[in-house]
Figure 1 (tube, rainbow, N blue to C red):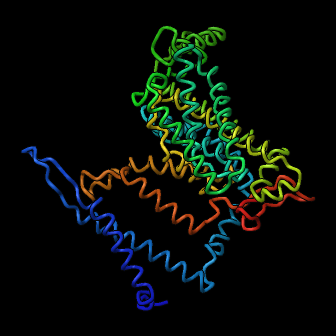
Figure 2: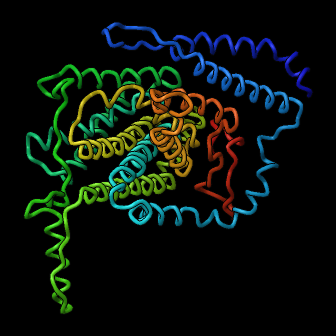
Figure 3: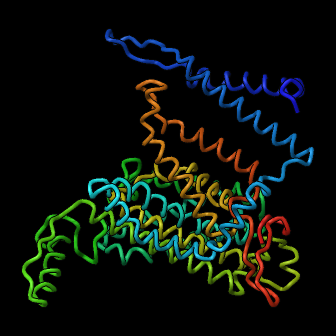
Length: 468
């Protein structure tokens, strides 16, 4: 198709897209209020930035139109032929991907230490390690409800909040440690998951989504307005996590002093001298990283084992067709309640860890946008796929954090330009493009739990809900 014919056929769409982009981004991005030296509020225009954004929108719309026309003409296969040589070359290494990824995760602090230095460890391990693993764990927990059982949950952040507040309140009023509060927070979240499951047993689809959305908003409003119990908008403090009672500070009984005693004892055993371990802020960060890594791996292990058990197969049967599931004699009541409870349990564990990491819990971290992000991670990764959800969490959360590092863009758009402010815009555009390119998520194949003679991956296009 020539450029002239393309513009002739799609000129109206491009013109409408440009006008809509100008109408949206003109006032939002092109106009900015500033205060001058006389304390007067003046309006500053930024037409160059609006022009760049409009051009980007037109380029993306044109790309979508080109792909659509090629697909209608049978000339586009989603990149299958183009990527086939790469896929064939990487096929032998795919079997080693889980082990390699696990090794990289375990050695991530060492990679940062020797690659960027000890001074950069708190920033990179916390922002690109701990934060991503929290969302990986939340994605895997919601994957049980949405990906395996097919129950659309828009209020999953409520269980995240319950776990955080459970840890903060139990440690504050009863003096319990993190390790004692952790399972209790998960159990409390699972209990609320069952309470949510009972009223929605007969609901499905959009109606189920509305009820779960309402549940998440109720938990948020209760946490924000019940000041006597939750601290309200001011929040509530949560004690820092310790290594079984050993604090990560410079106190005489802190972690550095304990490590000094341990290494000195080992050194004296082999005839060496004293060993001094100086306190460092990254000790606690590394410890938190390995705690959330262990919790995430526990979530993956339990999910994998449950999927192979009868309850996991009942979840998948429920996801495909509830009526057929009932005809097979499967108790859909217990199946739904189990899915809600197990998914909520891991959300509660992640919430308890979040409270320990922050040292402070307030309701602003549990708005609906968090549920939307977690659900987007599950959908983009491929519902039912653990690896796909992990990739999506790393891409979305890691990409958001990378925007803070793009300081060179200030030389193009001005010193006041902050790329991180446009993260939700980029997030939405990325979702649209990925859904056009990979509508079934990053990983659209599944390993069957039951097979005849030979285990073969099942394409997502062969089943009703897009997973196998």
